[in-house]
Each structure stands twice: as structure tokens, then as C-alpha cells.
Image (cartoon, rainbow, N blue to C red):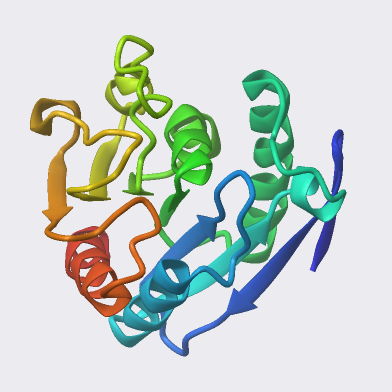
Length: 196
């Protein structure tokens, strides 16, 4: 499904589950795709738990950019996408999330799009080597429950447990969460069942 936003078209891939009890919307990081191993593992595990899943390729990536630009403009485009997604799937509880930059936009827009919770994979707490530039306020400001799944070796840092509803730190994982993506899927599937 193509959705026109103020930043250009975004793409949404739906995986509908018969009798779904929740809609999980996922998006990529700055230079990534919705085919990232952790996102695919989360999709499979969530569907197995009874959630329909929508994966969003944001407009900046469709246009070929590797960075989203100004957060306010990224958020504006995301809100347009989510309004269209909710038109297609209006009646299910919504959990939105993503990896890295996608986790940031999910946190910043949760209240505006009516999400009941956020899944933040590899939340980039700060730029590598710059812990003084913390983005923890985006987690704290989500206004809904937030699950954070980070690798213990993430150069973007690991949030404080107090900044999220639940923090899961995976041993040996880096920012890409690709050593054991199935574990990421298991953690997310377990957590989202509480919102069904």
C-alpha cells in the first residue's frame, strides 16, 4: 500500500492474521529497511501470538535518503501514514515500534496516533561516543508503555531501566540485533500479548 505524505510516498506491507487481537506497526532505522533480521523475527513472532503486522518504509527511504532529516517533518509524515493504516485497521489496539531511528519516531508520535504501547528496538540513546547528547527524553515522553530491547554492546548506548516500562538487554548483541533475532521476536511477542 502506498501512502502519500508531505515528504513523498511511504510504503506499507500488511501481514494480516485471522482473528487478530492487536495491530503491530514496525519501521526501520535511518539507513535500514523493513527486511532487517530483527524486524522480520518480530513480525513472525507477533503473528504467531495473534497480531497483525504492518511494516512501514518511511517516505525518506522510499526517496533514497539515508537520514530522515528534521524530526518534526519525519513525525508529520509518520502521522499521515498511521492515519491511513488506522483507516484500514480501525478496531484493533495499536502498538507501534521500530528499530533505531524508527524507535525514536514511534516514541515521539505514540500519543498523537493513538498507540497503546511502543516497541523500541536498538533505541539509539546517544550518537556513538557522545553520551552527553542523550535522547532518553524521547523514551520518557512517549506517554505510553515502552519496551526497549537493546544489545549490551550497542555503541549508541543502552537506556536506563527507569526510562522505559521494560528494558531487555541482550548479551553479546550490538546495534543490529542480528546474532539472535529470534530472541528479539520472543521478547516482543511476550510483551505485546499484555495489550491484546
